[in-house]
Image (cartoon, rainbow, N blue to C red; front, side, top):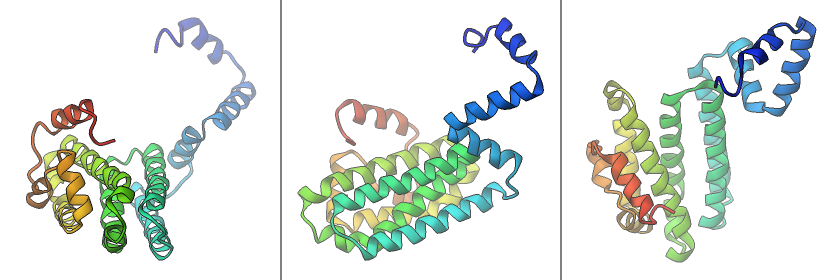
Length: 211
């Protein structure tokens, strides 16, 4: 950071008048909406992180209901998941809610699959494979995030992980994709995530899987 912001530059910024600083800040914030939203949350918003998380959860629930009612194909469902994933990512960027990143992604997959497993399996595997691969890749991401959390938090995700394992196991397309991409559903069902999950994931990616 010191090479990006040398001492002379910092001194010059400090010597600006308050009006000039304000003008500069607002100009920069217009170019970085994530930073602007984060500052708004930290400085103005009266909601707690948990309250914000609950609002995102409700938005996801409503969106999942809509895409389920209007299901067209696994391919379109995959685009919808990307959009909803963006909602989660925005929340995490603004609030730094690492716990919410896990819980919201678990909620997204569990509710989406619970309501659409029949729709997905009614398609063909060729049409569903991209969606299924995205689900398995996101499942790996959840496991990686959990492994980075303090072990005391794990028990709070155990039930949702078991639910996800059952939903994947009950869908022949998802189970086939999980096996092909090196995801053992027993990790989810038993709650026993391998200590070397990061190395497993890295090796799979290097070998061209999860894509």
